[in-house]
Amino acid sequence: MQLGPAPSPEAPPASNSLPRHDTANRRPGRQDSGTDAGQLPREPRPSMDAVDATMEKLRAQCLSRGASGIQGLARFFRQLDRDGSRSLDADEFGRGLAKLGLVLDQTEAEGVCRRWDRDGSGTLDLEEFLRALRPPMSQAREAVIAAAFAKLDRSGDGVVTVDDLRGVYSGRAHPKVTLAEFQDYYSGVSASMNTDEEFVAMMTSAWQL
Image (cartoon, rainbow, N blue to C red; front, side, top):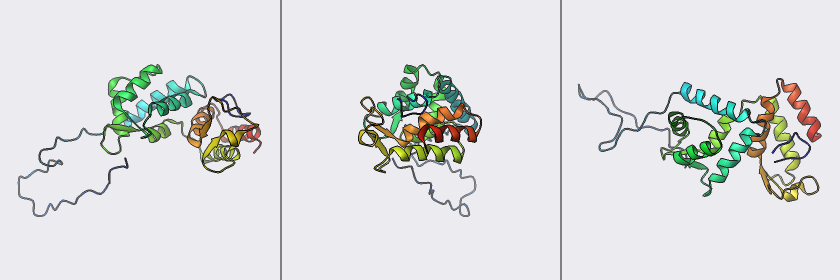
């Protein structure tokens, strides 16, 4: 997807409130299993270090494909989300990675799914996963990306449409662009630039901010 003059772009969470346990009156020898009677214990979430390592591995594979690597993965997964639930089950996630040629073993893929399974439904929260996948950016970089998007989003509705871009960009292939998709692309561009000054200067010049 190419946007203007920039470089070539291409379940509500479960409540955290847990019932308080009165340990003062607990009979000696009684152990709290952490589960209700008749229910199997849930699988423990993978350690933060293990998931962080997996995300670094996946991020590196995406960035090795250039600035649009993360954008391409994000667009593909959003297309898989046909019911608009903003979630993917583990099978969809695994098949998607394989189809894109991104390599994670089964344990790594399952770990990522469990980490972003916010409500215990067995599905991955797509937008939170994609947000975590983007390389970290400073506030200065995020601000200039948002400013460039705001310049295109004339209606201010958070979506750049053909009407917003009329006379500036041909939107036949991609009639709508969201801020999240804009960030997906520029997170890849940002990763290739060492300093905030360099990135901000590029964006300011490209989008005439």
